[in-house]
Length: 216
Image 1 (cartoon, rainbow, N blue to C red):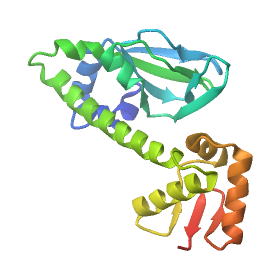
Image 2 (image 1 turned 90 degrees about the vertical axis):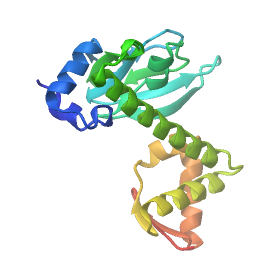
Image 3 (image 1 turned 180 degrees about the vertical axis):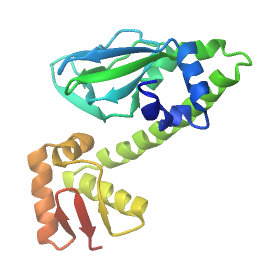
Image 4 (image 1 turned 90 degrees about the horizontal axis):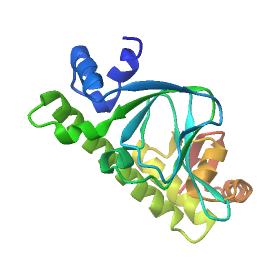
């Protein structure tokens, strides 16, 4: 199977052999679709009982308010799963997913898990999906902790402190470039860059691109 190497590395199929993965794809009515740059993978306010797997390319998860202001919620890369809460709940999504470049997505009808019964394959997928969603909730709580700070400086320092703790080191690489970090922290990129410059002058950090060293 063409996409098996990618799927074998997904936590969604953790602990499953190749034949079990292939059986799961059949049971979950898998469907691969291709999308052009800037096209919508899924639009807001639509029910979509399908979970997406990014096979190639990248996309963003975003939400627009009624005035047209856009908030980027997440970046989706090759090997990432997305839309899990909406697929599992079968509730209308209040967000959109848009391709940043040409991409391929494998859609799974995750609602089939509701009819798993004693099916060991679907029960294993359900168990893995529960863990994936739990991790995403924890990551969301972490982000809320950062963006709840009242100043841009507070948001940046909160994020860097958490990254240092995760890496168990004062020197580490962050998983974002500067634009992505600004989106993640919900701040203007210029304001964030200004704060990073101030922190460097104050001797609290040293940074080059995505590499940081902290001096508490």
